[in-house]
Figure 1 (cartoon, rainbow, N blue to C red):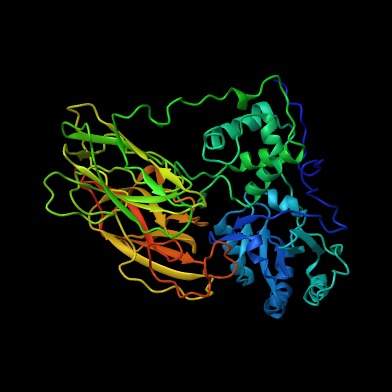
Figure 2 (cartoon, rainbow, N blue to C red; figure 1 turned 180 degrees about the vertical axis):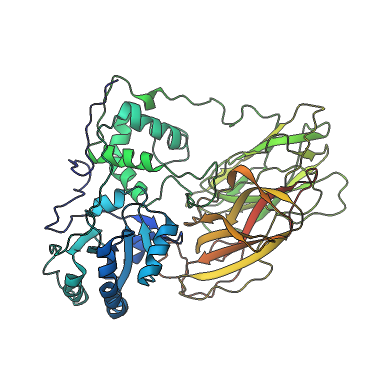
Length: 575
């Protein structure tokens, strides 16, 4: 099929969004909100800075003489205007590597965040075309209000601080920096380029009966929602649960590739038009069953819970037998389907074996051979054990569930179900896997300081035997900002294993490694979490509180779960 939509990304004709690029002689028009990671993997969302008068950017390119020449004056302006409500950053429009960017910064002695634009769509939206140029961006209107040499930036900053319109919004560069070139997407086709990306990454949730608020079941629907799609791509709000793509390799990182981001943005800004005789999104079909792996071997029906329209609910604990389980079976997968996901916030569970004298605590401990039955968390996928790995579910066992509900304004009933899939009778998997929460942090708790935008908490665990790491599950509440897991190896080296750079309480995802990672005995794994208890956190229930640990969402929690198995014959790991 011939592709018919030509779109040179430097000369876009934009019908569904405001123009992206302006000539160098004038400031760009509205860019829109956006988010990028810096050289340390820290997430920066522009609207978070809407309590500032402006954000200043210096265009940084490795090896650029203009960047070096501008750096000293830019640092001077930062020291003068930082207390006046101006946030100072740099931006790398070429998506250069973090290591190279850090090396370049060390040479000019700059201690500021550099937002690295891997996909280059943000830099293009701002109209960046030369290194060493300065920009002022309004985090409330999402407009570039000044562009020009750093020598002219001070005048613009004085205008902004005084509350005046910038008198000279665009000043020509006296010395041209290195040219910034962007990929040229000559042809973008809805039928062959765009629809496959949406089908692969979006339509599973954005479909009739899915968890997303609208369906991507036709070109007409996608075109209608295209301005929002652009916005959530630019701010990294969607796909959900994105982690730092520069750290580790994960099968469910939910990160669109650079090419995919460029393709979607270019297509939207060219009008989100349709080509070809077919609409691939209309041809998508979905399994008739609600179960991801087909009909389960066993279904556990959670006792229905009536949830009132309003109020704060205590956690509910129930015990449910595994009815129909006549013999001991080895579990290979399980899936939790909520009856009403609008009120069920999460669950914790524990298996009580038939000969148990007491009850294990939720979240770990006990027999390493015991099966893992998945709990429910927002955004959760079915729990599928690695090949030839599983746990034993004994006949006569019960499932003890702790249910956390939040009211939604109307009375409802949650009747959830848990599907369980077994290995064939008589087949015993060779290896064991730790449970969903093999490592819990912290052992103690320090209240989170009021109004603190970067409260740090950390804890560690030592893995005592050679092991293979499989995945991580972070958990915090509304003030949770980010969480990193770092391995400190016995030989003195260290390695970052995962960076959940933009933690979101609504998407508590268990991140699974593409390939199990060998962890030598004696390795200390440190989980470091950051909390945003500031007024800028729009989800913050009360920034003035000294926040304690607590089960309800307006309090906080901090734990990191790791799934691993020991190398020596499948022993399960976990503290």
